[in-house]
Image 1 (cartoon, rainbow, N blue to C red):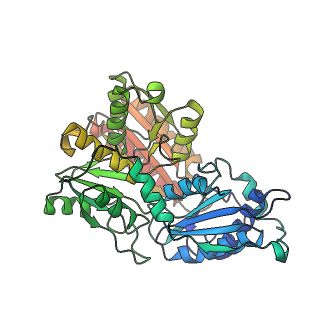
Image 2: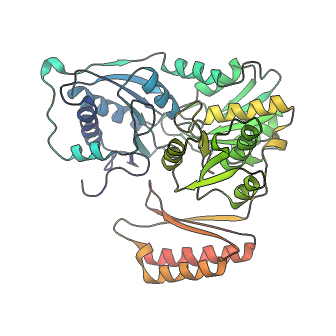
Image 3: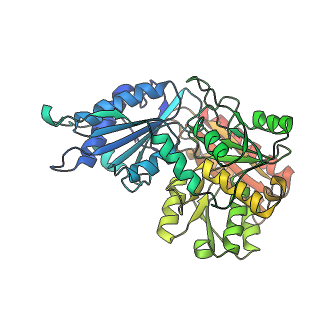
Length: 446
């Protein structure tokens, strides 16, 4: 158990490999139970949701065993979106919420995310991590907790989601393709859209435990785009495996990422005086074009480190109500405590109905500055960013881009990857800079 257990979004890794083993899930459940039960407290509630990965069954059972061994009562929601766990933790008066998901990753991976009683992701898991490696005294036999399935968890979430849609607006006559990535929203998203009046064309709604995010969803929109064109849909909504991310497709199949979606929402909210602080919170990855667009409309862009955790922390600290990431996390704290792809999709549909404009007229608010992203994988124990040659090539790239663009080099918080991002109007220079850095990192990581 060497090294830090928690990353930027809970614990994540390859299923049945440390730390995503049944044994570790058992210990995490026991540690979380002890941490949240508190001194002298009797049975308290924990809600557990999951996506559709095969390994979710294993981890769900192990977490349940650990939690009940410390006297916690466990409420099992089954497959629900990550934002549903945040919502139900708070509305069901639970002390803790847990989501079992690796988000947009393939089925081989899984993860465990923790929510506090306020429905927000835990900002500091150090208290849980400090208990995992030590002795965790179990509850006396008469104080062991119980577990039960909650059959209406998804329904509660669906009813709440519909309340976020303008009450006087209907989707009658609108044809919507929704791609659920064979993930957690495979039932909730089509049902909500249909109940609001849309003609729904669902894809990615046949999970088998192994096909989550495979050739579908927000990270692979080709299938949904083809479907939009084939059926003549007005719009497409592409979710990821746990439905906290979204990409929007216009009627031609063109993709609007999180930056474009946030640009639309920020200007609409600012126009009606709803945008708190007249500011949008986004990460350092958001495109320079978004920043220029917002500046031209006197809206502030407040940047944070990468990760929806950092976005939400900034929003809460500064009293902001809109934020997100280029990757499609759209956080609207007027409604929910974390990114919610379905609610964001509904807000886009509401804009279409209220303005009478097609998706293509709303999905591209600004011209992107050319941006190039590259991931370089490295082996455990390697620290390629500490290599002198890597440092030198990065320094040279920064000098070449000075005043002409941006460069961001960082380690992934969830995978052994170095992420390279650069922006520049000069696409030739952009490619040269990124290729040079990637080549040097690959050599150092070998």
